[in-house]
Image (spheres, rainbow, N blue to C red):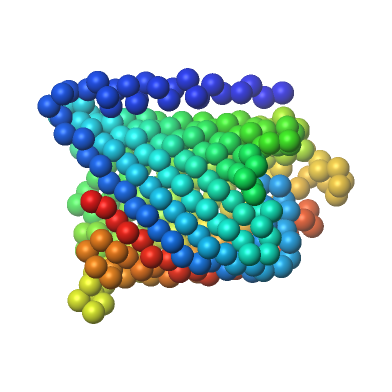
Length: 304
């Protein structure tokens, strides 16, 4: 039996700090609104190892807002809220709403920055509660040279799946990222490694995972606008610790995911984005062995 992590008790403190910190400090506000269309070649619910083996598309909507405030010359605090929705045309029962609350406190220590970050995520399928996930993560980051930026973090998470108590879990992880800048923010590469150990209520869902990632970002001039091309690749190996009854052996998943996106400014505050991604999930559990391709486009309004 795992122990639930009482992360919700942490929410009021950062919000209170935002409200009562220095009266003369300015409050930074920013946000985005977006709308578009996305097609999925294999509509699935990854958290339940369920796939439809059929494609569908639908309207995608998104909204984000963030506020930031300086507590001292070296410490700041921020809070954010994000909402996203995919509204499938045929598989309406799998239409998903996701709400995400983020809180962060960070402090500069000479060349490095330390942060304490919290996320609360709530997902719904067809308007019904489906999943909640919380994570808290202390991290340290900074430039070790003019071109190299490093970040390391510990992650503690808590997952609850509605009506699936066996899949409720706590997890511990380590995140390591390195960024190499060729030309400031106009061209850089990001390589990373993640380790995750998940301890579920039902032993058959316990696993250890190793993940490697590679991202390349290039900003280029198109029609006089500074556009952004991004390509990414992730590989994950999940090794389950106990026998999965339906196959009679320990489960193993290998997941390869690739994504490419292109973002073009239309005006100073309106962006157009096209994106595509492909996932190849290989598993000895048949329901978790599938391929999936996403393609979509959206308009995004950025403010202020």
